[in-house]
Amino acid sequence: MPHHAIPDRSCGTCTLCCRLPDIDELSKPANAWCIHCVDGMGCKIYQSRPQTCRDFLCLWITDAQLGPEWEPTKAHMMVYTQGPQMTVLVDPAYPDVWKQEPYRTQLSRRALEMALHGGYIIVFVGDTVFKIEPST
Image (cartoon, rainbow, N blue to C red; front, side, top):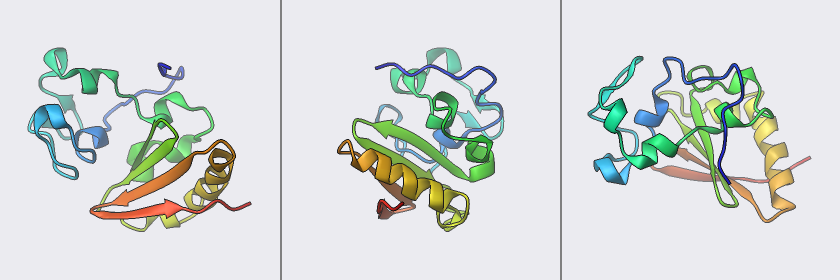
């Protein structure tokens, strides 16, 4: 199912999706800058970027349940879904941000909602992986 941007939400100067995830088409490893990214400005090859980049919208852009505190440049995290999994990529410069409020409580609640439908939440901090346990 395609995701659409919520009105009044945009990437702005955020470039976390150019740094945090791995992008196979560009041979870009996780937590490394894409060679085509200009920090705070965006993609130098925007018009010819790979389809993966064209199709990607982080969850903050598409999910109204994520409030303004989840805007990636404020949260220092980027969130997206893949099938039943919600993935949280944490900026390694802020490794514990996902454990702080309001994120900790919101992630636990969301994990509970997702678990009811077979879903789960995984957090990546550099090479370390955590699974969020559901709680009320």
